[in-house]
Structure formats: C-alpha cells, structure tokens
Amino acid sequence: GGGGAGGGRGRGIGLTPPPPAGRPPRRRAAAGRGRPGGGHAAAGSAGAERYRGRHRDRDQHRGWEWRGRHRDRPRRDPPFLQAAWARCGASSGACVQLWSDYLNVHLHPRSLYVIRQYMHDGDCGCLEAFGQGESLLQDPGCLEELEDRLHFYVEECDYLQGFQVLCDLHNGFSGVGAKVTELLCDEYSGKGILTWGLTPVMSNMGDAQKNLYRLMNTALGIVRLSSHSSLFCPLSLSGSLGIKPQPPVAFPYINYNASLNYHSSAILAAALDTLTAPYRLHSSQGSMMHLADTLNFSGRKVVAAWASVPFPARCGYSLPDTLCAYQQDVPWKLLSSCREQKVSHCFAQSVVLRGICKESPTSRPGEPPPSPLHACGSTEQILQRYLHAAFPGAFSTAHVLEQPCHTLPPYPQFFSPAAKFDQFIYREMFFPAAVESIPVLAALQSSPVLHTLLYSLYKDVRKLNMGRWASFFSAGVEPDDFQEALEELRTLSQCYETGFEADESEDEADSD
Image 1 (spheres, one colour):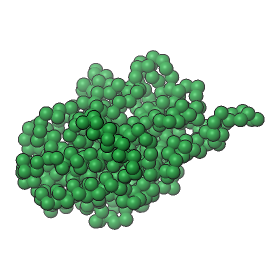
Image 2 (cartoon, rainbow, N blue to C red):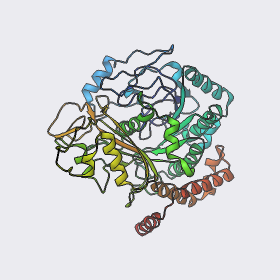
Image 3 (cartoon, helix red, strand yellow):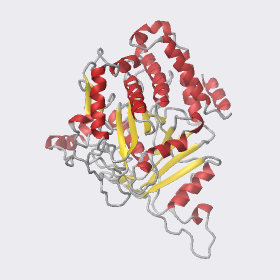
Image 4 (tube, rainbow, N blue to C red):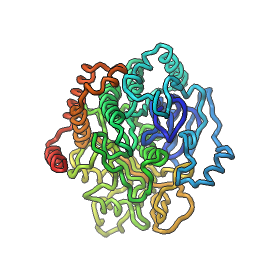
C-alpha cells in the first residue's frame, strides 16, 4: 500500500493476515494486512478473518491456529538488521528507511501486488490523484491479478468473517481502496468490511497542489470507502484533515517524533491491534459484522477512534481507583483528525481495555465500597459501569483482556524515560531497558465529533476553485461526480448532528 516510512521504488497492495492482539503475526491465516498500520502507513490491504484463525486470550501466546497448506516459519531478524537496530537504537528511527525495515513477518509472494506504473517517491510519476487509483483497478489485468491473490487466501478460510482494508486517504490510494472495497462488497455480499482511512501528520503545507489534492482525495475517499464498507474509521495522529493545519496528537507518556512514520505508525498500530481484538479473540462470540452492526445504525457508517497509549494505571491503585480519577474526562486521545469537543457524548461505542489483571474485591467485608465502581465483581463490570456513567444513554460494549500490548523492538522505545509499564502497573522509576509491554485503552465511537470532522472537510473543499485544478479531474474523476460526492459528504455529516455542534461551530468561527 501507499505511505510507509520513507522511500522505495514502486507501490503495492498487501494481502497478509492481521496479527493476534499484542503480537506480530507468526503464521499465515487468510488474506490480511499490508504494511504496519499508521500515520500514513499501510494502505490498500484487505484482511480475511476466520474463527479458527483467532488467537487465544490467555497469558501464554498461542498465535494463530492455522490449518491450511501455506505455512510461514517465525521470522528472525537477519544479523545485519539486528546490528542496525543495536547501532542506532530502537527509539530514534534513524536506521528506518523503508516499512520493511520493521516488518516482523515473512510475506508469501501472493501477499503482495506491486503497482509498477507509479513510483513511491520522487517529484513525478507518483500516485497522487483519486482518479489514478480508480483507473488502476479498471484495468482487467490488474483486477485479475488482485482477485487471484484474494481467492488464494479466501479459499483457506473455514469461516470467513470479512475483510479489513487499510488505505491511504490523502493520495491516489484512496481511489485504489474505493475500488477494492467495491470489489469486496460485490463479491462477498453479507461479509463484514472494516475500512481504516490513514493520513500522515502534515509537516509541509506549502505545496498548494499537494495540499488541495490531499483535500479532494480525502473527501472522495471518505464518501466512497464508507459507502462500500460495513464500517469506516479515519485514523491519524494529525490534528486536522482540513486546510488549516493543527498540532498532532500529544500523549502524556510518549515522546514521539510526529514527522517519522515509524513512530506514528507504531502508535496507530497499537490502537488498531486493540480495537480489532473483540472479533479476533478465540473466546469471543462476537464477529466483525456484529461489531459493525452495533455502531453503524441510522446511516452512521463512519466511526471515530480513541486511544490511551499507554493507559495510565499506577502502581498501588486498583482499576476503580484509576477510573474514579477520570470521572469527568476519559484518559484517551482522539485519533481521527479532529479537535476534541467540550461535551463528551456518543451514540454507541465499543471499548477495549487490555493489559489489566483480573480484579479482586477492592473493599473489605462489612465496609461500604468507596464508590459504585469498587462494588463491581469483575473487571468487565467495572469498565461497563464506568462507561454508563461517563456516557449516559449511549450503547456501550466493554471488553477486557489480560494480555498487554507487546512493545519490544522493533517497536520504537519512545516512552517517557521515567516510566515503566508492567501490565497493569505503572511505576515511576528510571528504566533504561526496553519497555516490554504496556496497557492500552481504545474505543470506536459513533459520536457527534464526526459531524465536526465531516462538515469541516465539506466546507473546506467547497471553498476550492475547481477550475484551477483541471489536472485532478483529468486523472479520471468527473466534476459532476465530485460535486455529487461532496453532497453525500454533507449528508453523511448530518447523521451525527445533536445540537451540541452549534456551540462548537461558534467557537471555531471566533478562532477564525
């Protein structure tokens, strides 16, 4: 897919299995993801899920229960790569030039389809417009190659849940992703399609053409991808998708370089791995379509992602103690390129908390519990009750996993030097060695914040003088189709209106 960390000559579509939560994939399991997710990483990949392919939610990590013909051996980094990591340090990212530098699994030859018509880097020959991406999959030869690779893995599934599609929004891969999701929707009707639209943190807004192409690609991508998906989620550490740049997302316990895709993709990958755990667990009865159906009612097929990476659990405090400290403000950050709203509200949400030990009773017999959370009998009940109190009236599902998110190299070691995370325990002490694992809290929300995101993008694109950018439409998008897509974007934004947005809009107008 598009994006990634740095150069590379040629771009491609990836078909590899998504990993079990918290660990890199070790065995082939169906069609799956391309490059590591993130920033602007991991585009155009489709992941087929199956029940027997789920990992087990236990302390011992059993990986995938693969029973097909195509097997991979666990990967060991070659000596030259081990030496490179040792020389430059896992946190700096100085030795990372390509996404494959931190790919932790061998890829089957059928896992990749390289698009040779366009270059990954350079000033010309890039896949930069939505219409270019769409036209690629209108070529019979390209379409046949992609379908062959897809069927190769789908035929190994004993129960196909659906597909995960990770796709760049800001460049021509938004057009590729739109055609891929259309193909999946047509060929696998009734299966789940969860699409993640990724954008990088924008550092250079000076190139007018690239900036305006980015806006138009993003608008078209959101409309087309969401229309062919069961659920669509924009995912980025960028503060905005619109014309005006906003600071990237800041995390209290991470010192990351927003300009490095190596860093931003690691944070988003931890969130993505956590968010998708409910339908990948061996013990779970839910499925990809079940997750989509709980969030996409009333035409709300776009959801927002939130995450606390890492979750701020402190030594000596129970989970109720920690959550009680955040009664008015959930300790997570919005990962969908929009300013957080003053009023916390959502229609429905799926929340996952991982790296948390099972709770023992937190109050002594005969003594009244310090809070309603302390009276709960299990970790799941604690989280569910907290969500009902923080988001009254919302439909909330809660999932708690003991297994943390593993962060050994090549995961970047960009955590605060004063932090050590040991599953549920956060200790304030100097810890020079690598942080092995962290707790993570993540959520997918159908939320009014999406009205702000979608409508702001609509207004920004409407301001553009389309006549000046004939080159964008010459790539294959008709102006009338573009205007129709803009109206669909506005209609989509209206699905998330509640009345709170009026105050938010006034605040934005004052800031302008």
